[in-house]
Length: 256
Image 1 (cartoon, rainbow, N blue to C red):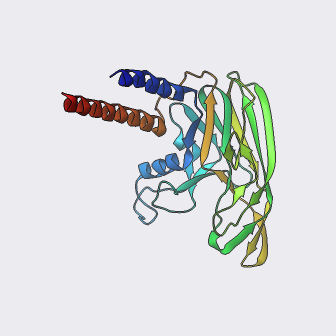
Image 2: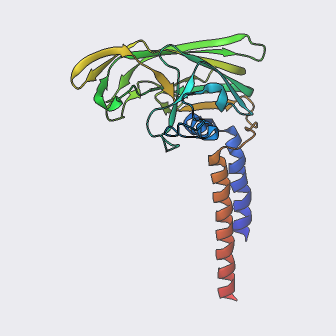
Image 3: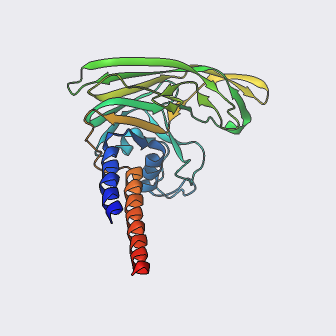
């Protein structure tokens, strides 16, 4: 029983520690839910299905999106895990307003599939992504930008942006500007180069994202709706508590 009593506070201290963690907002999942909420389907002419979905429609109680970005289907029409990307197009931008000041924010960057993407092979040009950070009063408190190359094969889906942010591969962001409440991401996709069945092709590259990462300035502040991984950790801990108690009880019964 003593071991159990020791484990309880250790588990809950670990659970509370998630308040200090970086949060990840799954744009693909939210885009899929926004599309499902509209009803209909891509194959139902009488439905209310629309594609793309404006970025404003994926806002919630702690993140507010605005701008000309949109959720678009890029892989599978049916799977929420591969449904959508937040596309900024070739020259687009969008703004995120947070419910509390944050100290870091990042965005993963991907090339959004053009039509008949499987016909394309290597993607070998650059794209520039920029960000402007503002405080509660709307004053600019920082700016950053980066141009990176694409690596891998477009055809086989192993391409990635040659940049990293806070441990996230193929992402862009900032971790050293404290107390901003708003960030505007913008992209200049440039004229990308492809190999189309061995033949060179040049054209605009649409750039998008799947995940938004952020950390609150107040380490004890949590989003109103806990992230799925937080629930998973709590349930796993409670299950472990129950399993430990059951084994302890069984051991005591054998001794008696």
